[in-house]
Image 1 (spheres, helix red, strand yellow):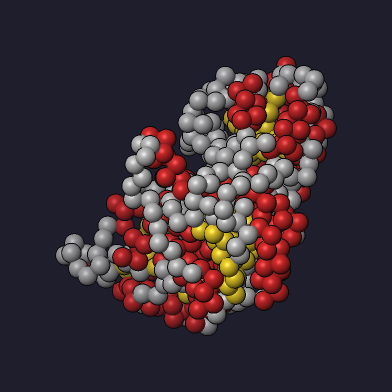
Image 2 (image 1 turned 90 degrees about the horizontal axis):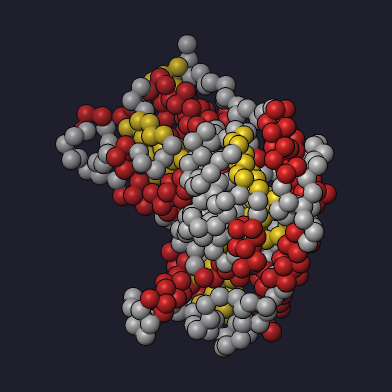
Amino acid sequence: MSTTTAGHLIVAQLERAGIKRVYGVPGESYLDVLDGLHDSTIETVVTRHEGGAGFMALAEGRLTELPGVAMVTRGPGAANAFIAIHTAHQDATPLVLFVGLIPVADRGRESFQEFDINAWFGSTAKKVVTLDDAASAARVVDDAMFTSMSGRPGPVVIGLPEDVLVHQVATGIVEPRRIAQSGPAGPDLDLLESALAKAVRPLIVVGGEGWTQDAGAALSDWAAQHGIPVLADFRAYDAVPHSSESYAGFLGYGRSDANARRLDDADLILFLGCVRGDVLSDGYTRGLEAHTVVVNPDADLLGHFGRVDQHITVGAAAFARALATVESAVQPTAGWFSDARTDQIKFTAAQPDGGTGVDLGVVMGLLKQELDDDAVLTFGAGNHALWPARYLEHQSANSLAAPRNGAMGMGIPAAVAASLAYPGRQVISVAGDGCFMMNGQEMATAMAYGAKFIALVVDNGIFATIREHQENHYPGRPSGTHMTNPDFAALARSYGGYGERVETAAGFTAAFRRAAASGLPAVLHMPQDPATRSPKNN
């Protein structure tokens, strides 16, 4: 019987699972895995910070059909990666994190970089496993992949004691388990139809992972045919094509007042791939009285608040395809459907913000004309994200990577991962100055691996979201929210990328085209009036 090491077997199992790349910062605690990657078909993307590695893996899990994979070392490395685990948990995104650990014999001695992996990650990951049995390496990897994608997707953490990795084991890998993609049962559809037939103000809210182009189009076409508006959950804007007559905008931070009222006025809400969570419901205050149907594979409906009249435990895409074959007797009240679309068109008509510097309202209108239908958008957290969420359109599935848990620093790593996963697609990142500085060093990773994207860095010199809260609760007393920023264009050029400062909206289009023509990861440094907080309402 041929043998190999546990570390090499881990790599072989990842290859069998179809993983194309792993993101990580190297560490002596998992040297044997790194050695296995040396001759592997898997590309090892070396990042400049473990947080960047985690966010890149998160974006890959969001944008593709497989979990993203990250690798970090023990103690400090694991701590730096934790932000991605929390984001993957709250966002319900499949991710597998490998963490190198101290040798087994050193446990409990407060040895160098020792930490309790279960205590750290146990409350946030779907599963935490330590590979104490080298012979189980392939099975543990397969189980992690399956667990991260099944039910409610999420992160799985695997601890790798460095001495266990070099143990000799049999070379055999295991056949990957597949996630069942069953559709809804006939009685489930019949029960839903009986509720729809009684509804006069029905509403569909889409979200979560696993949407495909055909499923999103099928659902939006069915909804348009039956006069039912479709809203997207917070930062799940790419589930259905925005060109559909049924798409009426989104919920959560930055949503329109019209959609907040619509959520309250609905007498039936079909949550498809998401739940009635905190952000979607404006802090558990909206949409609470409607007849509620939830389509979600999570048996526990983690994060859902309020009534559940029917729970169909299947994936959103499979359900959408099945629903598209159903002819419903639903008859929404006059104006319910048309008003929703009219309100959305009005809300997304770009308006000038006014003030000094670059006017983002105008820029978004110009950027919209430059975007391909399958462009991928990324951003982190902050007021800068309000503009792309409101004004830019998604016509393709898997075209948005942004944190639903409000984690800053994701936009640039996500842009790197998006470009590597889809090298032929246009990738745009809208970044705040604070958000960019948290992981902007991943421009170096982009240069190293040929990732191409254009980052619009909005520079207002403040943490605008927190400053806005201060203005509301502690007027006239700003504290801890000022920033001193670098020349972002020069910083991009120092990495070998393209950088240009854009002083006004009038110069944006030409600068954007120059950035695109450069063929490099690019930064457009756009100063914004620090008094501007959000897009103007029409």
